[in-house]
Amino acid sequence: MTSWDFLVNRSKLEETKVVETAPVALSEGQARLSVDAFGFSANNITYAAFGDMIGYWNFFPVSESDAAEGWGRVPVWGFAEVVESLSDELPVGERVYGYLPMSTELVVEPGKVRPESFNDLSAHRSALPVTYNNYARNAGDPGYDEHFEHEQMLLRPLFFTSFLIDDFFDDNGRFGASVVVLTSASSKTAFGTAHLMNERDDLTVIGLTSTGNVDFVEGLGCYDQVLTYDQIDQIPSGHGSALIDFAGNAGVIRAVHEHLTDDLKHSAIIGGTHWDAEPPAGGDLPGPAQEFFFAPTQIEKRSKEWGREELQQRIAASWLPFIEKTNQWISIELRSGPDAVNDVYLETLAGNARPDVGIILTPGE
Image 1 (cartoon, rainbow, N blue to C red):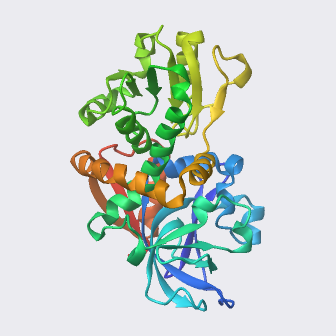
Image 2: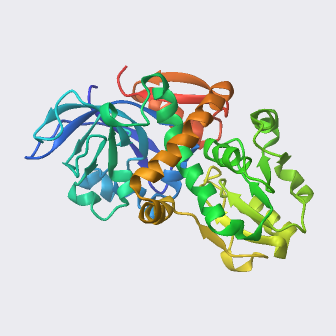
């Protein structure tokens, strides 16, 4: 099997299949990207869990028959090479980084081409957030370093979200909170957020995690306190607090809300690493109503206020120190082929992925 798509049942995430594909002919202005490699983590499970709510399933359509049966493609972040092009602005041989399907290839329609990036202007993506439609051109990308490609695939999009979460909270005066509680503290987006928040004065950052991940989370050094999910009653109250939920576990969310009640000033939903847990009934929780954090909204706000280049420079300035630390925390594991893609997806979906290992997948054997 040389060309394939990895598909997931949108309503039963544990059901998967690999479908052999044939390359479609390019139209004028299009380019074919051959997927080289991509990272996979709990963040990609969030894309699947919130796929219908946020529209993640819409980026990479499947055949009409597969769509009718409820199948979809989970987005990932990785590198690809232009192997065929009918675009005057994107030559064959160029290497790019961005949002990709779990497939061997992707056809794009390059537009708004700059030395450092381009947008995919394909019609089906026109109403989707531009953040996910932007592709970095390695040769002109100021944040690209060939020595950190694995880290970029695995962590750069997650750290981008971490940066925006931290900025959003600071932009809103931290909602009056001096204590911030992060669930799923071992997840990469969570500890990226903790890393940034830990550098702010007068802010206590608490991580909630499973018993088996306590040593790893404590070893990160970016949480002021690490508690297990059965120690929620030890979260300090009376100082103003905020919850940043990366897990989506109804029981955990309720326990935090019921423990902190009116001391909880803000409750943010980020992801769903505990994708199979029933979400809480929003109206009957003590304290504030949960609010979904949507990164593109903060990107749009800051791009208008700071300008696109300033936003990128600020992220880059925070990214490099973070990478230096993560190399001490995470080892990289490389796997290849459709069977490996399926195995890694199911392992991560089941919550069996190790927090100290980052998985990079290559479509080819």
